[in-house]
Image 1 (cartoon, rainbow, N blue to C red):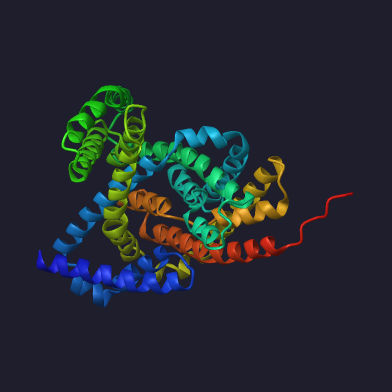
Image 2 (cartoon, helix red, strand yellow):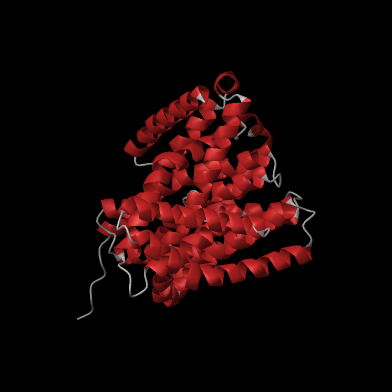
Amino acid sequence: MANALLTMLIALILAYIISEIFRRFGLPRVIGQILAGIVLGTPLVKGVLFTEEVSSIFQFITNIGIILLFFFIGLEISLVRFKKHFMETSLIAVFNTTIPLALGFLAGKYLFGFSNITSMILGISVSVSSAAISLDILEELRLLRSKIGGLIIGSGTVDDVFELLLISLLLVVFHSAAFAELSFNKLLLGIIVFVLVVILSRFLLIPMALKIFEKDQSKSTLFMGALIIVLLMSYLSEFFGIGSFLGALIAGVLLRQTLLTEDRKPWRKNEISHSIHMLSFGFLIPLFFVNVGLNTSLNSLNSNLLLILVFLIIDIVGTLLGTVIGVVLSKGSVSEGLIVGWGVVPKGDTEMVIATIALNKGLINVDLFTAIVAVALISTFIAPIMFKMLLKKHAVAPKPRKAR
């Protein structure tokens, strides 16, 4: 246990130092956290720190981190905001998701000869985006309430729901592919039973549980109750053959919907979301990204340069093209489309989770995992720089004069 504590301590310190260096240059912290894992993954360091016992403990902790991450994503998905912005931003979300997804799948399938599942993993890894980095830049420049800010927030909300559906489908595919002995009939039966459990949970189990947990009017008790709900839903989804991560995602969505009903105080949801955010992003998620770096093989980069280059182009060009098409069809300009496009190019935690789950399930190898991580790191490094540059240029551009 002492060795595991020392390893986690070193990992967190190194992740903090490197991520803070990146933050000071206006770059995402996640890059620094993954680089910390790559440093710790060098043969000399890894051989000393990561014994078999330590590695198993580290893996378990990062799996809990993924469960809480999916739970947090579910808590943050606003179906009300999705409906509100759907008409004006759905075109942007549809095109900047489906174009890189389709191009990534076709390139994986026909250019590199991968299987359908592997090609789908590659396609989704370049189609899932994160607007959180760009929102920080917009807030810094006081443009969060501008038209560009509205487009990014709106399309990001719609993107969240589309990506929720994609990830849910992929998680089921991951779980069924990893357990080949699970017949289609058993999987279908498991899905049907789990759907019934979800309905029962939404209208009966979760409301009853929350009433019990809220009796003490204690934040810690409410947080414990949320953990009980997410772990229960994760276990049930795993038991019915769907996978624990999908259960965590659904638990977050259900809990949000229950907490935001008329007879409840909306700040309850914020309390739980804040607590989960603190635990996950302050401790578990940094260790997860360190683990991503640990699983990255620098030796495989040279042999996969073509793959990395092709998917980097698909990631950036596909997202930009899809966003421009969506913005223009929504009666915006090409320049606005390019700015919004660069704003949603950065990769967040979701595609790293997808790649990690695929690696753990044996659906991709370390070389392919490294390629996905490399594409995500490069695009996340480039995008904020381009976004900030174009945003400043757009903000100072002279406005067209109105005709007299």
